[in-house]
Length: 402
Ligand code: FEO
Image 1: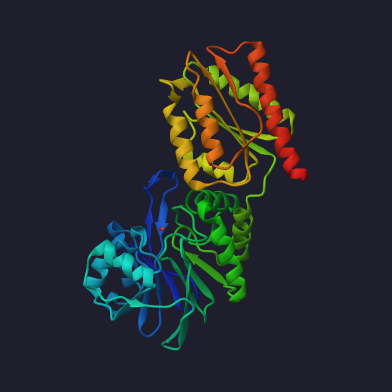
Image 2: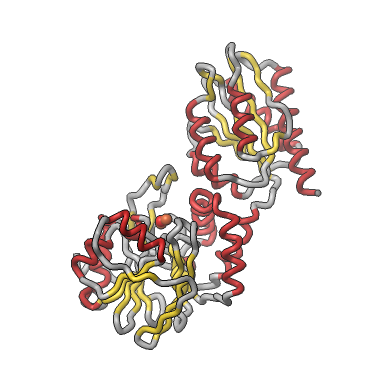
């Protein structure tokens, strides 16, 4: 593969040597329509240091990018900031091939690598806050447990003011651009929000604390180099500011209406509800699940004030696509939402009650009793739907003026 793949300079001592996964379309249930990258970085110190690796299938691409710069045999240290296999999958083969002097990881990282690879490779543990001088450069390690896994950590290269932030501040976005300033801002913001919503949203309270701690540690990187997507080399404070905003999920005048339908009755209810929401001042996002992915629903909820969920009753249950989305959203723990349920039914009509129970479990405050209509909505039924939308809008408005 040598010759086709080159390293990309990030700073005086740092080069990107990762891989581009143009074809990835699913990451654990998260639709990655624009693919992703697995970012690995080379620090040209003495010895040469590799920060993270790539998914196993992309090892040769990473080694070819390293070889464009130095003989890969010169890589003597490898820092593993995170053991998830999109960053460590290539590690065992790379270690076997290059025989580095050291593999460094957090204490939990050492355990996680051992449990993944069942290997005998010694891993040197670096402590939270530890600083190491290497070849005249200074590395600092900051544990970031649960951002994204218990083992996760950041590495900071002091001289170049580069923060290797692993999963934090990243996005699933393949492309030939390596830096956010080479990508339309609305595109990278959209993908960073999607990444936050689908990977990091349940960890918001920990990220809030991490941002406070980063301030206390006076970490003010000039460049934030995440392990997915483009690198923040211009105004990295922009992504930090977005993270600070997303950890709060302050309610907004925006309602997400998620539903599926069998004979268009629940879909008609959704439209009537949308009219009531809009009349109450809400920006309405209708997300029919026949054409909306659960991970896009999560992204819309990151900056919203209300979630309304509609489902027909099928075999006394919630319709399967709606149940799928509710299960997914429950795990992501969106905050500060009001909600309501609705749906049509033939005889049992259990779906609305089942959805309301799930919304309560998600700590979403029900703005009004759900609406369920038998068979096909008539004018009176659609009026009740519109009123439900108006009530939800009123609840959001009340929260926002509180
Ligand atoms: Fe990109 Fe938690 O791995």
